[in-house]
Length: 530
Image (cartoon, rainbow, N blue to C red):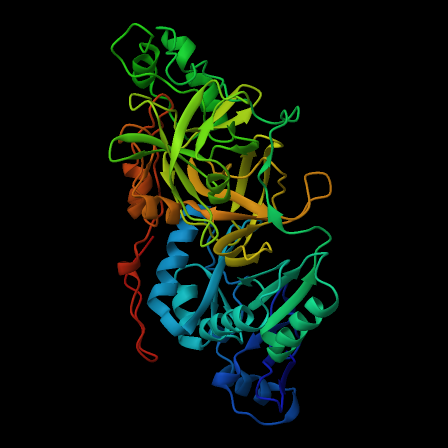
């Protein structure tokens, strides 16, 4: 026979555990039907009776009863035969759409890159059915979004300690609190008093480094850092480039860095025509990840953008606070532009407008070794998303998004909210550099702990927020993707080719939030496909 065990807990704050069949089947002699090994899944306390007892059930009658009491929608669906494999972009679209449609019945979502699965946290059976019907994994959890958000607000008011950071982790359904090496003595006591009051809503971990912004001194870059001359051979601002398309853009190199991107030879030719004596626009060779210098500070350029037809670039806000003008060289002989917007520490981005209005900067990221990645769109981060970062100190490094809407207390009153948390490393001088996923801009390097020798945590300003606040678009000369279309597949399809480094983007297997059924009691319907 197939055994089933049910366990109730007296404490209503704890989850109910239900062991259910899963895994490879084995045949029983009693019915000839397959029995599966048992797996433990979790249920919300909101949807079960709060009583104590342990019931061991065996035999045909118990199995039949369990089938009635335990609908499959309540269980995690990693092994559900209808679970689909998703690429990151359609997973993000569906995750956002389901979260919007399910409202309070959803409690976050994340992308399982190894299994290529979208995992959506839910609080009840109806929500689980909606999620699994779309091929995603429904994970029944205890803590609601409202409870987790309330916990972060409590931390802001009672645990505002320098050297701390926190974000909601949908994988654990808890608020993840980090404390760096400076949090000791009374600071540690203040933090633990606040977190202890929140019980199972939070987890606390120590990190060996010290949280700080990653702006750097004016010294030379490390050997693996990025210079301010890109692989396409474009000249610095105002100098012009040789009138030779092959010298200005290298379609093969761009395609190598981004297999899904198609280089635009006509854009390259137009950029190549720019010369000191010509009528075409001057071309800046400074691109994402390259060094920029302001006074005694070195940072990294994030993304070249367009603001109402004027060329500009994004970098970190604390870099914008460090200097009013920024140059492509340490001596300051090649001035690039002037800071027009800086937001630190409310958020952490700065907008620098190119001094030469005729500049046509490349919408690309320096990958090192003569390679570049075209950037054609901007997207919101999602937990589990594989990302890369480029910076003038450490060059190119990759990792994963681990948290969203993070708060970091760098000390000296510098508390930044709404950041992206990652396990990507970075060091001083990498501030402002681009965080990206393939051809999509994701964030700007803010700060963190550790380094690229021992690892650590790095936080990033979401680029979509920066673009919306600054009224900017990704790309030069109005050819960039709009910040207002970051959550839909059409953003990728409609993103213009970046000047000198353009690429066509195509999104597939997409769904818009309006396609997700609105849930009403147990009569929710599923009317869309993806």
